[in-house]
Length: 328
Image (cartoon, rainbow, N blue to C red):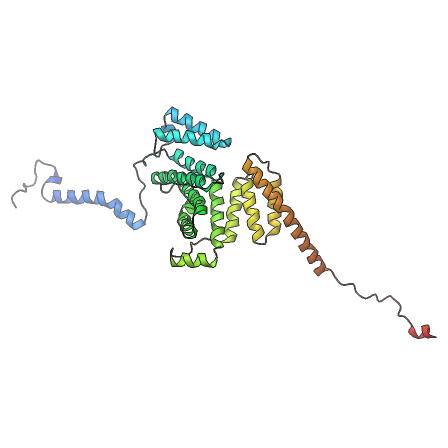
């Protein structure tokens, strides 16, 4: 027997002596590597047991933070976005990685910035929204709220970009908006954004398509007018009293020749009360669009009725005129 290996039996446990040591090491290796090998065979990845940094739940927040979050949500629901944003920013001073405060601050920054006509102030709010969203995305890369915040900030920033940067932004936000609707299908704003993006990509002009293919690696997949209207329909189902959703859907239906559906949506929008100044503007746009569509539909119905009107058959009961007797 080689030196260093005690004879069997030995006072030490079997895992430390002779072949028992080898089998023990092999058993330890199987226990350590076996689960990983099983994951590779099944193609799945085990979830992380360590909680994500900053992924705090409301119960884990201090009472003061919970009070500020509740107050901010109440202010946002009452259309006081600036006051709500200030409270979320106050929360982020004490908890810089607070997930809810980050993505909510991003959405509010977009909403406030879109009201300004000055592009400088608008761009500043949109950039702040992008920074909040990026921080939330670092905390939860696959979170529905964080991806929605990133996609919304990108979409609004793209309005201010030049053509090339705008197309790059539309390409980059694709994965975020699809992930947002997948992880949070109850967010009506995510479905509205998806519908807007699908419709915009579906109507790229020739130069935009050529630039996307030559520079950006191709036109983003998913652009489709019918799919865009379906996404807007889902947004309206989740938020039936949102005037902006009605206006977007009616405009898409009008451009796609679905005049009857556009009229239905606009008639439903007439019943929705306007609460904010933005609602008043959108309601006025809906009321301006409806008479145009009604006149166009009436002209179409007249043309259709004229085309389908049957020609009167000849009256066989009428007596023929005797021209010979008249001459006599």
